[in-house]
Image (tube, rainbow, N blue to C red; front, side, top):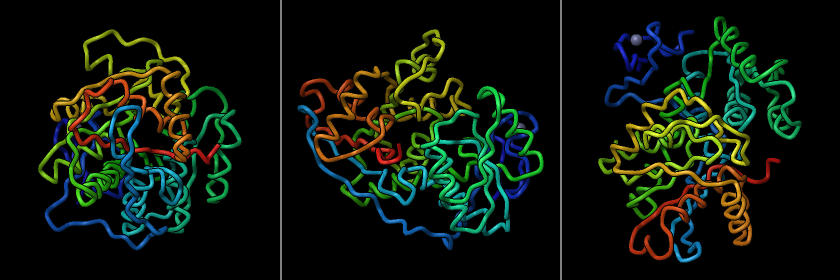
Length: 329
Ligand SMILES: [Zn+2]
């Protein structure tokens, strides 16, 4: 296995410090048939449950992907990435997420005995740091803005392996497993509704379903307060991002925008936005059904209700993955 540049084709080893090509292109994973990442580092991964439910008048299958060891689907990416790092003999990594991705990487690094430094902006809420601290991650609070944190991680990544959930294709090699699971849990759906920020679930689903030979229509859902992918998809002018309850997908400039657009188009899908009000209503609806998720996860439910009003989704097999637990705050 190796990385190759999706722009110029240049190849790089998996264990180097380069996390993108010298030409600026992003890496993809070159994997020969039969090559696989090990699975010695485990926190007890099991397939996540699927529930058949009716939301208002819309029958869907809810994929409870927050039921993972660290409480979000990001574990799928961390599982494969950290297992690969363990096999490569890497013993120290840096990452820059205070959210679900950071928690997943910190948790799996703890299980693997890999030192993990997480860079976050100063002022990040104590609740978010609590889980990182429990996993004994070394939390580096960077004074200033989010951009200052981005600068600090780039400095750190010059000398320490960058276990990025955005740049590193091994993370997406992990998030594809949801598609393979679904294939054995009632089959590949007609349509899948996915919250979209950096594209970690969207691109993983695209890779996984592509391997299976049949793509469901991918409906990518963004917050109306931060919707760069939606704007580009429909040829609209992007608005400046504003704070949203769907903080997990509030990504103003997604690195893998072009890949996300290509995946949605290839699937015959669409890109829509939902308001904070609709997201909070969807979160309440799930809670009233006994399902406790974070607001970002409720984006998918709000999106499904927006895209399939009334009985328009009848007869379709629609899967709505729920990405993150509500227990974290
Ligand atoms: Zn290149």
